[in-house]
Image 1 (spheres, rainbow, N blue to C red):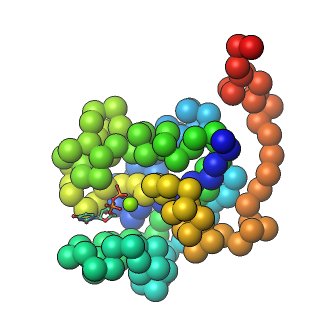
Image 2 (cartoon, protein in one colour; image 1 turned 135 degrees about the vertical axis):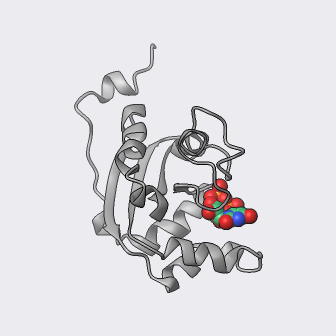
Length: 153
Ligand code: UDP
Ligand code: MG
C-alpha cells in the first residue's frame, strides 16, 4: 500500500553537515519526497511530537534536543515506506544500530541519533499535520517510475 511517513533530519545531523548524505540515501532508494521544509521546531511542537513518550524519563531531554537547532522535516511517500525507512534508519541508539544503516554508519550516541521516522501509519497520520497543511503536500510522478517500481508481471 502506498504510505506516507514523516522524516526529520534532526539537529545533530544538520550541525554535523550530514543532512545531504541522509537525504541522498532516501533519494537513492527511490523514495519520493512529497513535502519538505527547513525550520526550528518550537518546544510546544516538540512536546506534541513526542507526546507518546511524555511519561518516560528521557522526555524532557528529547524535547530539548528536537527543539535545539534547525532541522529538515519531510514527507516521503512510497509503497511500504514506513517499514523501509525504519530499516534504513537502524536501531534507536547509534551504538546499537547495524552498520549500513543511517544511525549505524553516522553516529554512536544514545539520544542524538540523527533522524526521525514515523513508526506506523497511525504515527504518520498524527505527526505529518504537526508540520504540514494538506495543501503543502505535493502529488507527482517520477519520469522513471516504471523502472523504479516496476513489477515483472
Ligand atoms: N531517546 C533518548 N533516550 C532514550 C530513548 C529515546 O534520548 O532512552 C530519544 C531518541 O532521540 C529517540 C527519541 O527519543 O529517537 C524517540 O524514542 P523512540 O523510542 O521513539 O525511538 P525512535 O522511534 O526514534 O527509534
Ligand atoms: Mg519513535
